[in-house]
Amino acid sequence: KQEVTQIPAALSVPEGENLVLNCSFTDSAIYNLQWFRQDPGKGLTSLLLIQSSQREQTSGRLNASLDKSSGRSTLYIAASQPGDSATYLCAVSPSGSRLTFGEGTQLTVNP
Amino acid sequence: EAQVTQNPRYLITVTGKKLTVTCSQNMNHEYMSWYRQDPGLGLRQIYYSMNVEVTDKGDVPEGYKVSRKEKRNFPLILESPSPNQTSLYFCASSLLGDSFPNEKLFFGSGTQLSVL
Image (cartoon, rainbow over the protein chains, first blue to last red):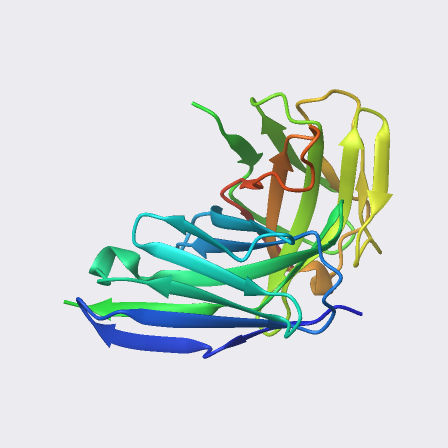
């Protein structure tokens, strides 16, 4: 059974700092990995999707990498801002119709 | 505006009283899915649908029903709710094109359900 772990569970950083969020999964047989952002009282927003054949994806200040062989992904956030404060979740797709989520990392960026 | 709409946002009910949480999307997506989110357990899939009249169980389907009579709607039905179904529920959708499952998932804003 696929398991997804995110470390740390919570992270607090000063504004402007570059940071890395970690995601690990137990089964490397995946179609893709997605990083989501969840704001309180709102749904999840897909940030980046990395297909199993890809190594990384970039969007603005966000960069996500995928190492299938080691079962790891990282989300790099450059020059963090208070508006980046949210919970970040990663999810892997072990089959076309299913997603397995991690519990998330709660990020606080202090002004 | 492209969106997934869930209703209601908040619901308090009592054990055994049937309820329906509605989900509607305006993006002509074939794939729709329901999740529940619980502290310490994360998001878990309840049911999903690949198209009209096609539904299948996720990881935690017990106590839930769904239907997909129209492409845009995917209601979640709790025939006899129990307190252990108190949770935050999310509906999601995506395209089912040639690149599926490599399509981004769009989520609704969530329904907070409390069963007393």
